[in-house]
Amino acid sequence: MSTNQNAVSMPNYIKFAFGGVSGMAATCFVQPLDLIKNRMQLSKTKEHKTSFHMAKAILKSEGVIGIYSGLSAGLLRQATYTTTRLGVYTWLFGVYSKESGSNPGFFVKAGLGMFAGCCGAFVGNPAELALVRMTADGRLPAAERRNYRSVFHALIKIITEEGVLTLWRGAIPTMGRAMVVNGAQLASYSQAKEILLGTGYFKENITLHFTGSMISGLISTAASMPVDIVKTRIQNMKTIDGKPEFKGALDVLAKVVKNEGFFALWKGFFPYYARLGPHTVLTFIFLEQLNATYLKMAKTES
Ligand SMILES: *[C@@H]1O[C@H](CO)[C@@H](O)[C@H](O)[C@H]1NC(C)=O
Ligand SMILES: *[C@@H]1O[C@H](CO)[C@@H](O)[C@H](O)[C@H]1NC(C)=O
Image (tube, rainbow, N blue to C red):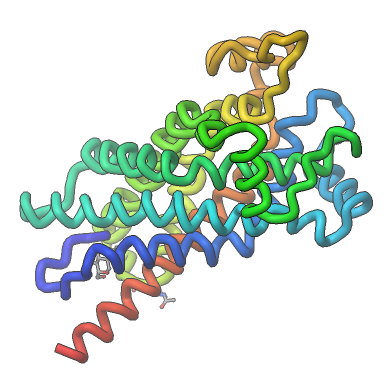
């Protein structure tokens, strides 16, 4: 994601494919942490004080399989959401760099990241909805469980029982969240790489990719947690006395701050960072490795 004018050009479909593969590979490592984060954000009582306490409780009641529940949904989410967002970002980044002869500035990067995130979230919303429901299921009383067997079972059941449009429930906050996350994540990664390379202490290697993606993970976590809690609550919203629990995104924020305190917006910060951080790091490292391998092979062929 830095300029290299004499680099071999990469077809756009490869950019999308590499984005999706990188995200899916990263998900296999971080899925269990995602489950813990969702449960922490949904727990309204003080039943689980720490993330470790929560992890122990899940392991005890649901076993190792419980920890990995929702993996199929997580992978489908990457195949849709990350394929789209990374594909759109690297494609537009390349178009912009080629047109202007230099890398875009920070605000253009942030704009490209937000746009890419918005597209990704729209494409990825059905898998996202299935993922949130599947990871939350084990927490519900047995009678209320949805008992989806896999992401495909979940999608089919949602379509037949609740209608196709339900798949895009919560799409607006999800897209809002994705714009914040991707604006922060993609732009800070590209920017961090540029700055780090500029110091002269770094070269284009895995050390650079690791450092840049660590920085990117921290920045995107801080920025996106309040948006994420809105999304999770809306997707799990129940109807009480014929009325939906929340009126909209601002209503969720107001109710959380009023009933649970301001810092509840960052409840589950550790498992959230522990997921988004490594996911960000692994995704970018896989992406850069695929990129480097492709460019090496393309060069030897030409
Ligand atoms: C792939 O690597 C090349 C060379 O290091 C770089 O110019 C390009 O921006 C990279 N592309 C992506 C998508 O990371
Ligand atoms: C990457 O490059 C830097 C700077 O040249 C070097 O200090 C570091 O050891 C390299 N890392 C790897 C894994 O090769």
